[in-house]
Length: 254
Image (tube, rainbow, N blue to C red):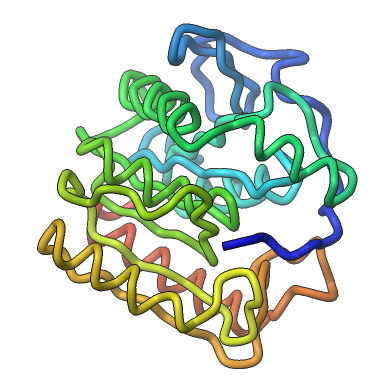
């Protein structure tokens, strides 16, 4: 599948510019952690209670933007310890050509390695409750959600939003996570017709029956409220409510 050109949401300052390694606190913070043989960066949001189940938030092809950080903040307000790893090492794309170049520079296997390191870091943090995490991702990040969950049994809840799968379907034999997917009926990047093959592969290879919701009138990036042309408020609200209910059922009450 190919991604459709879109306008970036408002970029944020590069993660890690004021990184806090291993710090604990209730406010959002930039963090650094070892992952896949390198130093990784991310944005961590902790709930007001100071602890909760962990959720990995995986970026769109633009990078770790203000929109993705806002999603982590929203999850924290809902009671989750949310970590958004920065797969681009502080870079944010400003146009579609740059986003494509940066996305291509992170092959799926390498991205999964980095994200698995983020899972380990999140589970080791004192604020994180439980032995598994959820993963929520958007566009490129939605594809990474499925690849990560297929390869890392510590992910028990996988939520791809209009996930773009770039290098063929993962091997789902190792999947342990339940899957809740959100897709736009008008999405030219992830056609609804492609979901039958994805559903069949997940069910046949793992025995897990995924739940896919298709939102009429919504296109690609319908959840991104930083992109007025793509944002679909009604679909976004329904998808968010379903996501929170799903995470609570899989990870425990937040």
